Amino acid sequence: MAIRHLSMQPAEHHSRERFLDAALAVLLDRGPTALTIRGVAEAAGASTIAVYTRFGGRSGLYDALYERTFDLLREMLESLPPETEDGLADLLGLAMEFRAFAWANPARYALMFERPLPDFNPDPGLRAVVLRTTFELFIDKVRRVSPPGIDARTAGYQLWSTMHGLMSMELTLRSRPPVSGWFLSPTDEAYEEVYRSGVRSTITGLGLRNTDGS
Image (cartoon, rainbow, N blue to C red; front, side, top):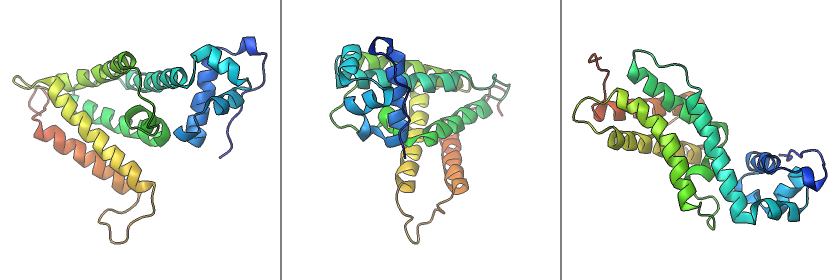
């Protein structure tokens, strides 16, 4: 896939946001392994020195892009429809939107939650902030359907882990040729239903329910 290039501008006009837009374009078009200083500089129409000046090096660029991808997830969570009286339906809706977010670009999801760049470890403070920010929005949904005696954070973590596990398996399996005789049909509908039923089963198993008992 051809990489998108931003139009050439004088170096002093290349803002941090411009470089991050370029880095995100490289990630979406070519995947994490293409995230080099040179590749981002070329996509931004700038010199490698300009990238170093803005971010101090590859680690700084990666940290900034990591933060940007979580900003996109947070924006998605914040843009969900208003809460209804059916907290369970709202929670399932969030889980399905998370799947759509991951499936929209597996490379972005991998940078956020996996280790496609073995030598990149996000700054611990940054990682704590972005995970806490997005996870808290998720926990708010879980808390609405957590009856007395159920810790919303623990239940939320277990459900969050189920969602990640199902999503990671789907992305891995669908990135390779189908296995002959595999029980799961390699279609969008089949994988979506497995994910949905897995989330529902976990919700039920955790004892989450609407306050009216439904």
